[in-house]
Amino acid sequence: MDEDFDFPAADDMMNDDMDLSVGTPALKVGEEKEIGKQGLKKKLVNEGEGWNFPEIGDEVEVHYTGTLLDGTQFDSSRDRGTPFKFTLGQGQVIEGWDEGIKTMKKAENAIFTIPPELAYGASGSPPTIPSNATLQFDVELLSWTSVKDICKDGGLFKKIVTEGEKWENPKDLDEVLVNYEAKLEDGTVMAKADGIEFTVKDGLFCPALSRAVKTMKKGEKVLLTVKPQYGFGEKGKPATGAEGAVPANATLLITLELVSWKTVTEVTDDKKVIKKILKEGEGYERPNEGAVVQVKLIGKLQDGTIFLKKGQNEGEELFEFKIDEEQVIDGLDRALMTMKKGEVALLTVAPEYAYGLSESQQELATIPPNSYVYYEVELVSFVKEKESWDLNTQEKIEAAGKKKEEGNVLFKAGKYVRALKRYEKAVKYIEHDSSFGEDEKKQAKALKVACNLNNAACKLKLKDYKQADKLCTKVLELESTNVKALYRRAQAYIQLADLDLAEFDIKKALEHDPNNREVKLEYKVLKEKMKEYNKKEAKFYGNMFAKMNKVDSRNSVLRKANR
Image (cartoon, rainbow, N blue to C red; front, side):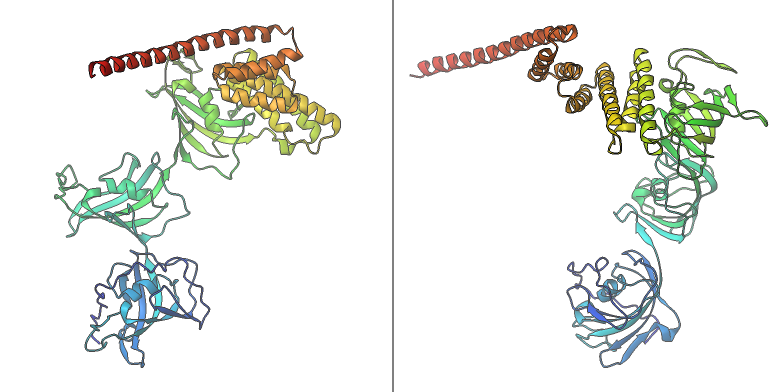
């Protein structure tokens, strides 16, 4: 048969009943099974490599030999010595091929028996393939090139030319370094740049680049087919500088290589501490609260003025401090807890996590009020504070007691957020006490009660009433008559407008401690709240009934007028 044999697609034969890309029955060599529900059969001749299968849109390369059931050969790429290439799932070949080949692995060899409904049907392919012929194809899948429809709308296709490294992809905030060349379909170069850096969310040249780069790995090189909606649309683009004019509704072909990128993360949920990694660290460990860290550090203002320099000169001691001890600004503490040993990062810290509204005199310059500050920091080493699993039972109790005392000092200083962290850490040390002796369990229980009560007091100060309620409930599960827990839970209930629950807790507290002055005062507050609530409720219902009476009166007048 002639060399231009291209397996014309059998029209009007596409059927949605077949889904063979997933869940195809596993075959042993020499075994034959039906795949799908339309009579397509596959016999495995030679197992392939790996676990991957080609997907719709991929460019596959195969060798094949096609025969009728009586053994008559009608075509063979092997005889021509040239593998056959086509795009899978695009109707470029008969349906039996599209459905069968997507079940194959690389280097797999299989024989497909394809019924006429998935081949050339009643029309056949004269003169070599008769009407309603069942065909057999001996197919070897040599390789395939992945082609992805990135946006799932046919507007942006990515063909991988060179595979990348590892598995990570850039995110919106990351700064990527790329090489790219953009051409029109006729080969005219529109734009070209090597070693250009941009932030993914801000984009470069056209919308396609930022969308594509988020799907790429380091070192990956791709060919993008960019439809107008991800290029320059119906308006096109005028020539600017070294970039040529892009006509309206033009499809672009862009070669894009992701050289590298710098990971940028939001350290805080409010996006006011940003970290850009300049050099990746090693391992997986990161400092925790209480860790002692050694760093090299340069602090700058927005205009580049250096206000702090530590550990930069040869022979100079590294800057050492303990995390979460207010030895440095909060933003630096938080960022360091996200870093690995050896990591170098650039930090952008908003005033709320730096020096706030006050002027601050530093070693090398004065920081004006309400200033953003910028640090280049290298985490040289760190020693983590021991976690509960690193301690024996007595050490756990001692560590919990120490954290409780630290929390008390912070609470008295009005530093409630930092205080509650100490109380939470204390409870973590002793929450699992199954290995404790009887005396140790008593000590642990007393610490749990004290820390949860103190934490509840922090939550009340911070107006987190639901969490205060939960913490007091934990205490009451251990000590059902704890007056402080009943009192503080009642305070939380009052703020949450659960006045009946508040009254229940206060009455119960007074049963056990009738002379408690604080509880009595809170009962007075509660009674005032209840009185105020009852007045509002009475007024509401009074107004509602008054309106209802007015409506009834109007309806009565109307009925009399209509008689």
